[in-house]
Length: 257
Length: 364
Image 1 (spheres, each protein chain N blue to C red):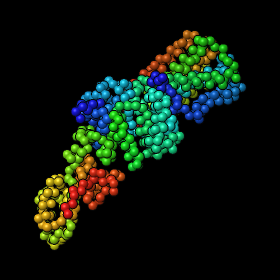
Image 2: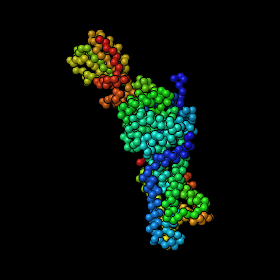
Image 3: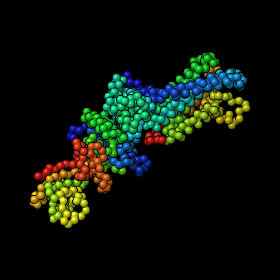
Image 4: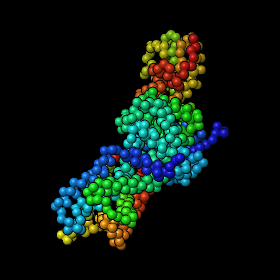
């Protein structure tokens, strides 16, 4: 039995991208962050600063939200390498549609992100116990990470269709990651003492929306505010996906550096 | 060729990078089933653009093309699933050679068992068995090229496009691949093949399309191109004895009068000089042969040897693109004895004289 083209591409993405070291680093780094940063900061950050919970409990949903970035980076980099090594051309000259290739990347992002969520929760359970969440809360978590992953993957893919230099691509990708992570509420909350300019930037960061939604889902508090955040993430994901699709249509397939 | 099944036909196909700037224009070619069509041209002539157009990687900006009964513009996946493409650029996945073959077959939906046996066949055929567990970037340039061709042959196809597939290959590997492609063509695979190595094109292609600056100059069989555009050929005449000075003078003048340019003896024939061998170049070399035979008979000289260089594809190619100036660099290009003019003084290696020179027989 032959799998549908999109699934064949997803399998290919996993096989060609499976490198044990990078997988360990990719999921190990945030896991270690939960353990080390969570433990160390729990003793110095008072619970009053983190909504009445331990710093580890605050950090875990943030690191779960971060998986949207991690999954997006996987697909963005995979696309860039495919372009760099002419696999995009090779695949486009085969029995695949460009939309299928793009969909394959998005599906790869989702699977990587969701696997990352499982790893984060797995690491967190011994530290904070199993969060008592409902199916709706779980769906909210998965939808948030999924939409966020599509957003970030779309952003990087759109970028990758325009840039013709690896240096430029990886520099911008690193900057975007740093920007999204450190100017968000993944590691720390926005409080009254946060400088207003910084707070303004943090409050429009998509990762902040994701962290907000997941924290509420972990607390079993999915309500209209969470749905609004999800809606914004959905809109951003749609915009970035359209940008990536447009980039694909107009992409020059010639050689790049 | 009356019942030849045409699998690819283009009519005035063109691609403009921007309005008025054409990479290729007015391309009208045909490819029959089981036929090998060579695309020849200098760098930037439009060969790769043509391949990219015909494999749907680039949308044509003008003209039409029908491939396997489908319109190139609308054929899409259905069309591409019947094509194979070896791109000029290296394309590879970051897994071992063996895994790459397997993965590529999987992507094309080749059944697992078929893929397994085909991978073994390709590893053997392209001499990649010893590097099967290496990652492609750890291979030599030639191995990477062989790998790329091998990978493409993992799936079934009706037309195979090969954009300079033999770049960086050693002579033996090149021969092996060309022989295999020839065999596949004999079994019905149609092939479009671009190369700079004219000897290869001569060896492999049934027909050749010569591109120059984005335009098609000619399409014909290699033999016809050679005959039509081969240009001047070189003739070597050896007499059994040295001709006396008067006869040398008379022979050379006779050649000059018939439009030949004498290469040896070099320069002006000095009075009092005798010679037993002559070399000259002429556009109508064969028509001079009866005169030489008659002349030598009438002067009582034994014609020891008379040979005429075969027209070469390179000569024809240079003639077509206007690059036929004589620069003394007309040495055989490859192991097969390809020569741009087959200088009489440089006989080809034994067993490789293929079409380089033709001995016209000896009038002893």
